Image 1 (spheres, rainbow, N blue to C red):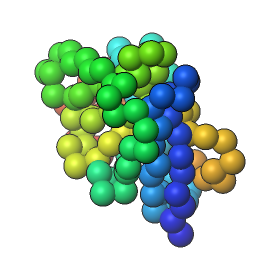
Image 2: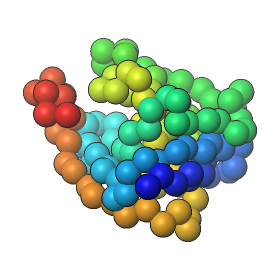
Image 3: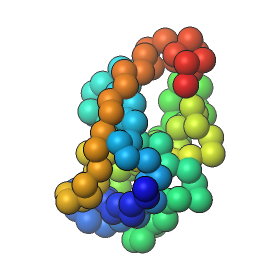
Image 4: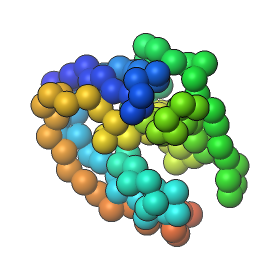
Length: 124
């Protein structure tokens, strides 16, 4: 079963839609310094199943550490609703908490030890 979900940032400038091909969907709950401070809950979506519908020009980026991941934020409200993770170079990591309500997805949350990224990555 697949479902199309929509979401975006707090102010509405950045909007997207994604095709989710599993239900329940597996979410990664990462404890790295970035995710722990922002509450980001990762839903991995292949690039082909993701489409921005508004606000591409409203995004600003930030890179840290290995400078591989492309963290994208709305330049108006500061919300990171999705980004390019280094763990999944062919997919976007969508913040499940940035989805619009009423999507009907069931979830399965899996802890991910981002503080020890190299070791944790082997288990993905």
